[in-house]
Length: 130
Ligand code: THU
View 1 (cartoon, rainbow, N blue to C red):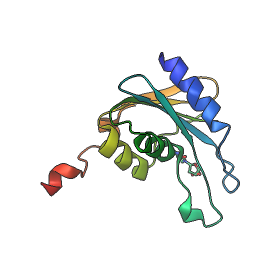
View 2: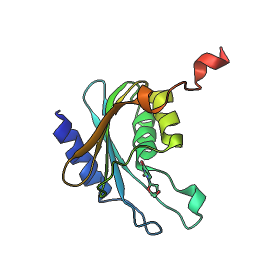
View 3: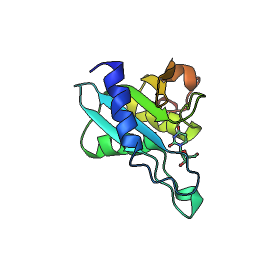
């Protein structure tokens, strides 16, 4: 699985986005440690606050299917500027995925690449609860 393959999977997932309110469609493709790819898209709701981002849909799908270890996530939106994960998604991705490689892309090209630890420095996580 190359980075381009993962980006392609995120672009395909984006087509399923339910973004009637913002019109901003996002796709995500999460790669597990054993090479499986679990995708997600954003799902909006007329009660706006119930909207779930593509990244969290992908992670929750993966967890609910029994996946536990992850390597990379590709995130795609049709925007020239990079579309990084929101704060809530950074927290969820960190908690369940650890220090993932985060690959950002639009419909044409890669727009950025980060380690999740660079996007979420000084995280709150289970270590604080010990
Ligand atoms: N969104 C995502 O799905 N992922 C991101 O990384 C940024 C934002 C969604 C949420 C909402 O449906 C729309 O994009 C506009 O914020």
